[in-house]
Each structure stands twice: as structure tokens, then as C-alpha cells.
Length: 292
Image 1 (cartoon, helix red, strand yellow):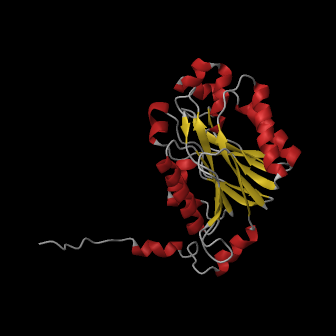
Image 2 (tube, rainbow, N blue to C red):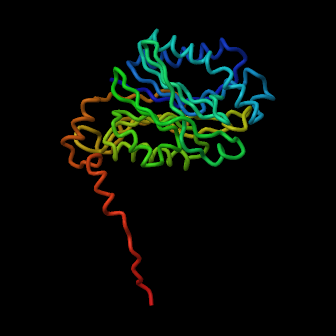
Image 3 (cartoon, rainbow, N blue to C red):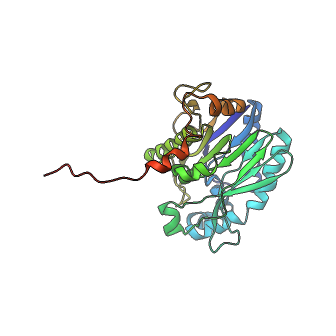
């Protein structure tokens, strides 16, 4: 099957119809290129704050709630497009008022059959902690789909090996990201590639790109799409199926074979996934003094 990961620019929206047209074009373009799994980036839904006007979009607190209030309408649109094109979609994540003390960073996953579920971000970045005060939400999940078992690690979450290990049964881990600098992009990319190595699976990263001067939270985006795997038998020797062009909007696509995930876990040159527990008896350290 083919995976499409977005390098997605945020736009000023004058109407809901404009958002419908934009999303329909993006999904339609990926489907025409043969993609069955589409990945949008972290906080890509923040452009919906512009529908409440400039003051709301630029205000950190108001923008959180303005976007959250639109997410059920956004879900209906994603479900319609998923069914129309026969694709699975990880929608752009958004701050959502979901019964927690504060909004959570939530990415919704949509199947073409009409089912949906979500993944909440687990560990907050410094900006999310203060001044935004977005909080961690519900637990990690694995979605059992017609395309295989799929997990999601939202941006910073991909940089934590134990979160990746919790998704060891996943064939594919999706990594929607929002980073403002090249260093941030590479932190997440290295995390995504590391999780592919450790779990011997496929990871797919999407990014926000470009400037959004109307926002204080997502005003600059740096990154590109990418699809990665373990550099082992049946996979690219670099671990890179495909990568986009830095900061250039559009889809990055790659053909992947889910059966190869099971094969490399059984017969790979290395067996990181099955040898993981051997670390446990070897993590005790002692300090050796080598100075006078």
C-alpha cells in the first residue's frame, strides 16, 4: 500500500467552505496518487481559529477554544472524505476540550467505513506546558485496521523510547509534528527513525511548513514529510523510504509492504524488538574513577 505524509501550510480562512475545499483538494490529491493512508501534522487544525477572527486567532487561550469548538464539524468532513476516497486519514491534531482539566492535544483517526477514534499526546513540550497550558490526555492506543495495526506518537512523544515500546505491536507508527526550527524537525525525525529501528516497523512523519503570522502558537513551521523503516532486510539501507523537500508544501508518498514488517521481525539481520528485554539486566552502572 502507499502512505502519504503531508508538509502542510496553514492558511487564513475566511469561511468554512474554504476549509472544506482545501481539505478536499489535499485528500483528493493523495488518493489520486494511490495513497490509502494519509497523515496530517500536529496542530494543523489551528488554522480553524481564523474563522473566529484575527483577535481570536492571535490570542493563545481564545485560539484553543475556537479550534476545539470546530472539531466535530471537522470530524464529519474527514469521515465524508475518507468514505468518498476509500482512505484512512490521521487528521491534523488540535487542542480539544475533552473533559480534562485543560485542553488536550488530540489527533483523530478516521476509517473509510465510518469508524473514528483518537490519540492524545502524552508528554507536553515546554511551550505546551507554559504559556499554553495544554495537558496530557488519554492513553496510547493501537488501531487495528484493514491496513494493519497502527499507532500514533504525536511529535515530542516520538522522542521517548518507552512510549514507542508501548506500541511494539504496531506495524506502522504515525508521527504528526509541528516544529518551528530545523533542530526541532530533526529531533522528531530522529525519534521517528529510532522508533522504526527499535520496533522494526514503519514510521510516517508529517510536518507543518511555512509562516502563519496571524498566530502566536504556530507562527512558523519547519519540516517535511517522511516515511521510514528499519535499515535491514527488505527495507531501504538508509531506513528512508521517502522524504520531501524541506519547507515545501505537498505530499510525500512511499509504497510499503506490511508483510515485510513481520518478516524482518522474524528474520532480520538484527532483532532489536525481540532483544529489547535483554537491556533490563544490563542497565546497572558503576562509577570508575580514572583521575588522580
